[in-house]
Image (tube, rainbow, N blue to C red; front, side, top):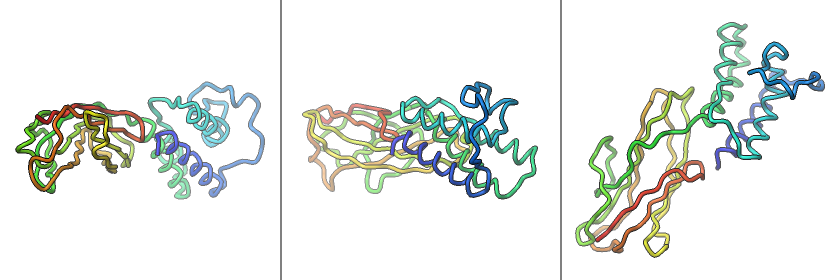
Length: 229
């Protein structure tokens, strides 16, 4: 799924949850609601009105136009207003968690610290900071793993992400592809991710400079070259 499709699905769940707890109104929006620029509705709208009449509409429009903002903090705002400074009604908690989940997807834009390759046995062992290379000898190598090291800001909650990766040979042939799904802990400021591909014996990798491509939520994210000589 793309980032936009995940956010759209969350917007639907948020609306459903608001309806289920009686927070959704069948009344038309207050005059000028769609023009409000103040964050979270300012003094013109309550937070629940802003969510219904402004936020969800803007989120859906941004997904359609592929113009989501880089950050979102609506979950934290809801938590402060409804829990820290509000009645702390348990019925609000599932909605708050959905808003935090949306924040996490919108705001997750990790920085690539390192990307490279290493020869490995099976199964490959995960290790941060290991030596990475980009050149291997065909006569010796069996399995090669890629490793991607990221840094990212604090997450409001655990976040499920999905990488799709491909090895593309020098002649353009697709050699291997897989999906890697991970759940990031909210306490992690860095993470590293890896997967491997290869053969039981040496001598089978095709010589040439091949391309490794990785996509995050189906969008281009990283690329590296791998040479077999």
